[in-house]
Amino acid sequence: MGKQRRVSHLLDEQGPILGARAATTSPSVVEVYGEMGLDFAWIDLEHAGASPFDSRVLDRLARAADAAEIDLVVRLPSGDPAAVRKVLDTGVKTLLIPRVESADEIRQAIEAARFAYDGRPGSYGAGAGRDSGWGDASSIDPSAHDEAVSVGCMIETRTAVENLGAIAAVPELGFAFVGPADLSVSIGRPFEKDHPDVRRAIAEIREACLDAGVPLGWVTDDAADAEAAIDRGYRLLRLGDEVASARAVLGSRLDSLRAGSE
Image 1: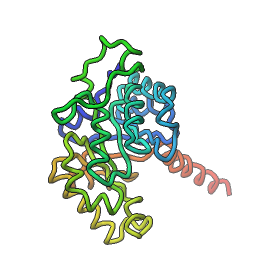
Image 2: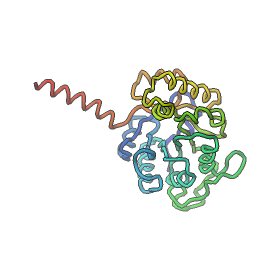
Image 3: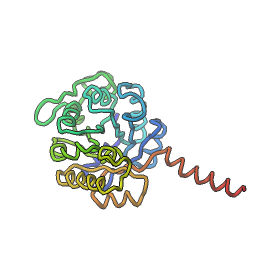
Image 4: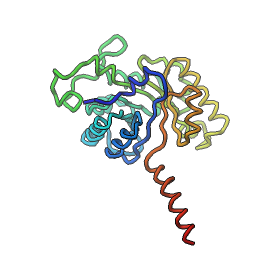
């Protein structure tokens, strides 16, 4: 299991880490992304997809990722330690915790993902799922597991921005994604991502994470914007999804053909 290169390993190297959302949470889409050469497939369990406690769905996604040698970035509904452990038991190694507003919230999630954390025992423990070879304790290498695991957070509220210093200083925080849409709502400027207050908050997130050495993630559907983000120090880029791509490509073809037949 786990033939793919993990995000945690890619973060140790130079260069951007590129992925796309599998909006339909389809194992087939995950395989296609891997064959394309993307580094990760973003699986959203916060706003869509299955319950994080439905290991059967995640088992299928993890198998597809293994087959295509691509990592899964699974966004959970929260940092609930029970959900963290349940998802990791399927072989997933990269988790994203949304709406983190304090250091304690993300610390609790990271501790639940590891056998050892910050000089003490972690709270992951031995499971009986896919990650442990279906209960074969001899197949578990705690050090290799902890090395492969990466837990990141979304910074997407005014409170999180106010607590940036403490959040960014949490030991073994893998990465942080900016959430401009929810951030704009929290600031009182819903979906006005270019409003000066929103842009100012995004700049604060960027500066705090770069100063703390926390790799940053950005979401964009535009190649030029992705290149600009890389130039600004962002390491992880989510480059759209299969549904938006179908709308753009097939929609353009449909409009062209319908216009030509008039």
